[in-house]
Amino acid sequence: MIKSKHAELLFDSGLSCSQAVLGAFIKELNLPHPIAMKISSAFGGGMAGSRETCGAVTGALMVIGLKYGRILPDDLDAKEKTYELSKELFQSFECKYKSLLCRELKLDDTSTPAKKQLDHLKCTAYVKDAVKIVEELFREYPIK
Image 1 (spheres, rainbow, N blue to C red):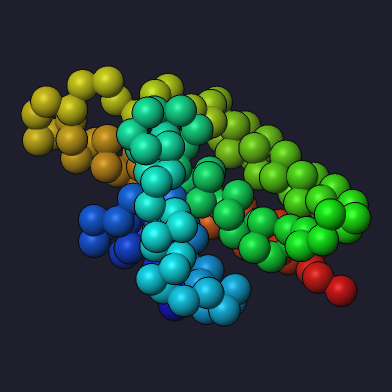
Image 2: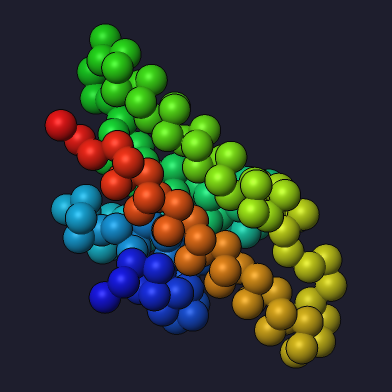
């Protein structure tokens, strides 16, 4: 299954945006589903519902960190690569959506079913695009 579609299905099932993005990569990262869901659970809604950094972005950051992140303190190459790719994620996402902040990306008012549906559709797009951006980064920067 295409990862962006998998992420969409996870999001539509009721998982948060961060969980959906990380969940789309669990096989590739050899990460058990329950662990991935727990790790990413506090990042939905712009980090614990605070409407700060978009959960799709934080989920994508987790994926980048799991693939490229450093384990040892002196592995500065891995740290630099992780930061470089994270910044590319930010630039790509922000170029398309003009913000990384949940409060600027989502509707303020979801009081009606129509507004709630529109908000969900917007977040679905963020989830799918965050996955696509990460996939592109992985193609551009394979681990050697």
